[in-house]
Image (cartoon, rainbow, N blue to C red; front, side):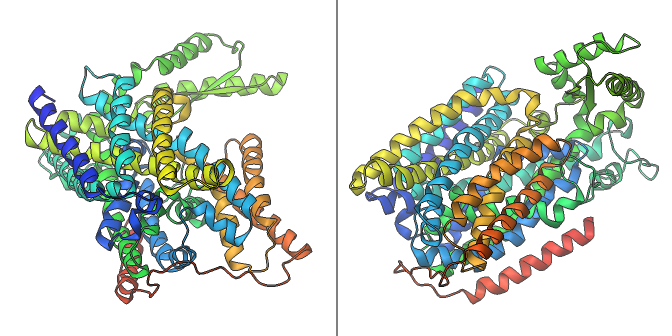
Length: 607
């Protein structure tokens, strides 16, 4: 970006933040600050859900997974979310709004007990501060660093953190919702522009210069269109299922595993559901959620497809980026020093290559596989332990950043794209900060530290929390550049597994089995991290989505046993504590059915 572009970009970002603060003026009490006065309309809710969800976590992590061998299969996170949102709109939301809750942990107070509420609040706080907030800051900084050479990743982390904290501290949820209206629109437009530019570049590039996954590209010529080349070059990546043995997204995950993070994220995740809890009515909330579900169907076309094309066009640059990574260099140096010997030296170490590198460098990959076989043979004979290190041929997380750097012409489009990316990361980060501060203030501070705190003082506590959490996130974020985390997207999903299956199991079981006793809540929440951790240690090769499915099933089984031993005397009755209208929207019902049908059609086309 040129100096003039950076100036216009900064002016635009500050103007949007100023809009959010201006629209939230006059908001004073805790309900105003944390839930926008329960007055959000459907169109604000819909765009805000998308803006809060789509961040550089997707632009960096999801497009990076698409550039790797995973391809279009990663789009299941988006298309399955569309169906999930429809379910949330008509099953979860009515119960949440009826009880008049501020936070999702608070709902457990009415279904189980205060202990359940506290446990979930603590778990959620840990995940927000040390995983999601940190990952969003890092992934945003990575894109900025790729395109603004003089701004380092640690410096970019602080810039992003300060911008997001600025307006959420002053305006709360209402400021988030109004800025999300701009950010949500821009990120879809910006992603569409990148898709168009990538297809155009693909059409103009000679076949000999393009990397691909398809085994046969004989039907293509240099003059083929970008769309023809995209489908011809990526035949092996344009499928929704991967083998059962895959460590990231096996087809077995589509049956159950992927539904767990989906339902947890869209139905029980505070920084997402906080928008719906602020609905002016149930009908408005349902229309907003279904609108967001329709927008989710578009996301793979503006994030996943560009990631695949980035590998086609710029795999060489991704390889250079990998070679410049200190940890990756260290792993390759270790491999070269150990592989020189006929019999592997201590420590016994195997080396893992990613799928795309293997297909593009078959001879080197064969050498590494032969070396791994020797290591395992020695280990089998001696009983010595074996460690594993990853050798990255390409740094896939740079896919979207490289597309911007190489394809977007200077001027208006550069400002547009960077504004979209800034909106993606700032809106998501602001939403997480707002949610984390809400949970700490309402579920921890007010309950345990200051039960008699006034509304005005609770808002002050919430603002202070925002400042503390953003500082922690900005300090930790640069550490995620270490390849041991396996990429931003995988890092987030893997750590979510320690809490999301248990939370979902506790909610689902408690709502379906009305005689489940109060003890089921805390037992289920505490059991999941233990079960997931044991599975991770005992079955390290099992995909994390399959570990989630197993943990979910085990927690359900445990609660079922407890209920059979000591059921409640009478079925639980949830209270009604709201004054907003609770009539279901017939328009949202029809639109929801259409969204589900379109989703199934997309799966049929790309299965």
